Length: 203
Image 1: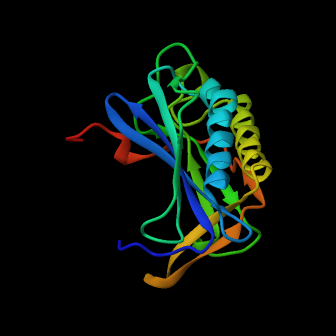
Image 2 (image 1 turned 180 degrees about the vertical axis):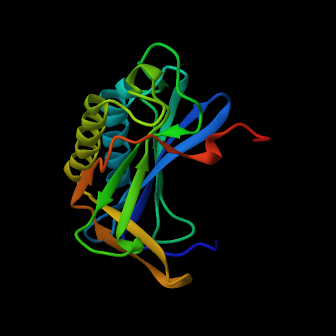
């Protein structure tokens, strides 16, 4: 899809590696007024810190966190910031779930419609937190929900508002991207979900 400007917004890309394949989580952030390099640096630093304190303890040690890449969305040629201070593997020991196994946290905005909700697909976790072939333990689901709440708080403390970014409406590209503030992160159930593109090539 061609570049679409999202005024005064940035894209946070949490980048990792699983079995030699790049994986990522993406979340949007909105700034009040024009952002500067310092604003982007503060954001990448805050999210990198969150990965180290909240995310890696809930991720299998077969997954490696590489860095957090924040890029401005005002223009196709824009400012960016990278922070990999907490680079390293997840700290859950034991066998890992399959590459495409995930747990989903829903991002709510208080509005209806696909353009006003988002999802955070968890990187693979240790099989020890799987209650069955279809579900995770309530303790893991609750911990993941709290962790994403902490991510939203970290983004806010850095001077940004976590948002859902919408670039399309009714299947057609928007003229300019729009943002809707995230008000709540919730684990809707304990079910294990799938991110098919995380499978190795050939699957």
